Length: 306
Ligand SMILES: [Zn+2]
Image (cartoon, rainbow, N blue to C red; front, side):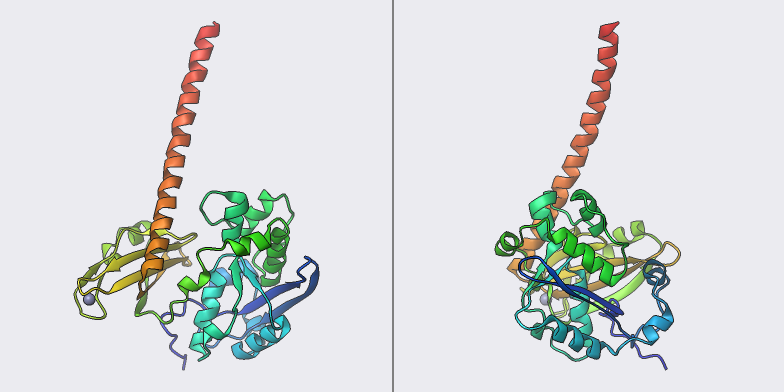
């Protein structure tokens, strides 16, 4: 019988890829491990297509905890972990928790390079994919969607960043999102993203503490496929909700919705994301207006030179 998967487990880690480098920026070693899944034995078609990993690859993989222990041993003590976006870390923490390990005992020093990249190079207040980042710094990357290739590509982007400066000015600590097990969670399938965004019920819930109706604020984008919001109950409890959407096989969307205890830091983070979203929207509007104006000017110019 298939084990029922915990509802807050967005996916199982089936591959670990890592590059180890010295403080001087010299590559020391690489690691690639396959992991045999325990809950989602049938591979997602999309993952199979993107990664080229076959079901037999993962069947021959290590048990999750063995792989994690090997990875930590390989990493060594006093290691600083660098990751592209906080997605992998979030998933790693969910997986550790499902296997009864305390995620707090892992990855004590970890930084999100995607955020650092935005702070130092992109300056657009958005998260950008690894492929786009490589292009921006003029580097040829290895083919994406292989955990080790991704790690090598991340290392390549690293060389263009001031890591020391980045680590010093790091604000939105990834730890703000290690919120433990959610208070409530579900996953649901929708026909399209339009349907997801128009489902008002995703922004309402019964307070887990007192049962009263909690209305969340409008969604703020937290990067690719992720939306966040905050809400407070009349009883005084604060909540933070996160929704991640994944593509299904036939264009449908699977939504992973989870709510966590809120706090001031998370509310501030939400407001910051919302503001950046507005800035991006205004920038886009300005660009469209400027384009229209330029077209009009061009028309005028033709008239005048005649
Ligand atoms: Zn309440």
